[in-house]
Image 1: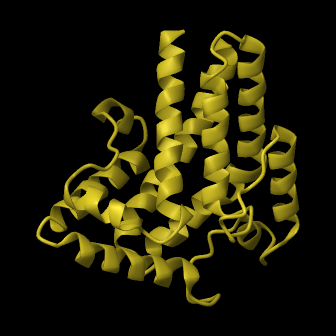
Image 2: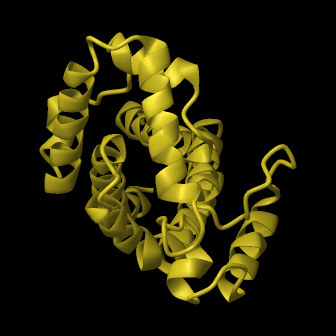
Length: 221
């Protein structure tokens, strides 16, 4: 049980880290963490499980090394500019972080309704504090983080753990795996991407790895 609990905590932390990267334009706190080397970094054994994951964290470390001579305010401005160019500029000049854009070819497509249905079934809803659509990558990652937290709070309830894992597997099969790897490839290739090149690699690597982990956890449970 301790081993499974450790895996769940690692997964939860990864989803929290990735959600933080996409949720909103980089805050001063993130720039401060990057400059001072306080960013989340997993142990080397976890990185060896996936080539994209390993390459992504290597690029993130290199970015942090290059940022050491900058002030926190300078780096935050750079990160905010990059975030704006990548995700906020008009369509055709940015990388759209919405499932509907990649699956339906437009915003607010059928995929958005399906995602909302998944959230509703799990008994949660997106906070009104964030104006982005429910199929934004940050919210889909947050949903996975929530399910991991639900598992951790139900370590003595195997039925609830299996329920959460089944919800995750379905969400992976019907949503994340269908668009996030392609989104990450597009983000990595975007010419204005610097910091987010590493985040794209990390996201893709972790998503593909976690798809296998969920299957293994279901077999164990």
